[in-house]
Length: 231
Ligand SMILES: *[C@@H]1O[C@H](CO)[C@@H](O)[C@H](O)[C@H]1NC(C)=O
Ligand SMILES: *[C@@H]1O[C@H](CO)[C@@H](O)[C@H](O)[C@H]1NC(C)=O
Ligand SMILES: *[C@@H]1O[C@H](CO)[C@@H](O)[C@H](O)[C@H]1NC(C)=O
Ligand SMILES: *[C@@H]1O[C@H](CO)[C@@H](O)[C@H](O)[C@H]1NC(C)=O
Ligand SMILES: *[C@@H]1O[C@H](CO)[C@@H](O)[C@H](O)[C@H]1NC(C)=O
Image (tube, rainbow, N blue to C red):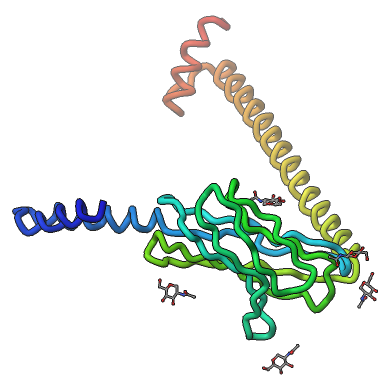
């Protein structure tokens, strides 16, 4: 694979058109970007949980060219110093890692089958609150590394006040959207009725006077074509 790339790059010196080489290198960089190891904690990178409950700290990895001896760990940011929570090496896609755990109440629940390196944090306390970093390094990608941060917020009880506030806001927003829609419907309806009335009036005016065809080309011709029917 790599010798092929070098072969093509070497041929770049023979290309008359340097632009082609630039394009090729750009393409290579694009592929390089696409294959890079990526750790992900999901779309919502935080959780708010009650003191004493058990939470999942989610993390998955992805690499287009696959993994070999992927090293990963979880770290807890203890006021600036990174404290290792657990670590392991995943030999390949089909082998489960043997995970070393350094923190109490931590359980590894991931599986290589789904590229999952999530952990469970049992019976959380307020001291568990903070940022957890999921880090990975893939030797198959020249040791490329990547990490993602998941934040744990520990609360006494899930705030009811916030929920009612959310409800109020939702109701207010919903209500005003409803009002706005009603208003727009009403406005459109009114405009429609007004337009109809105006049309009627014009028709009436035109048909009743029957002479002023030059006032407006359209209404004039319209009136002109209609007048015989009505007459
Ligand atoms: C957290 O929960 C535990 C068990 O429910 C309780 O013993 C402890 O007092 C709680 N801590 C605080 C600060 O509320
Ligand atoms: C965190 O560190 C700062 C300064 O380094 C210190 O003032 C603060 O008390 C520390 N907080 C805790 C919870 O250890
Ligand atoms: C969590 O708390 C429950 C009840 O207090 C206890 O039975 C369980 O062993 C605890 N789990 C861990 C991992 O500490
Ligand atoms: C990872 O594994 C845990 C435990 O089995 C599961 O709850 C979670 O949904 C998995 N995450 C993904 C992204 O598959
Ligand atoms: C991650 O990779 C970068 C280069 O891509 C390197 O400079 C850095 O030291 C690596 N970090 C760790 C923790 O391995």
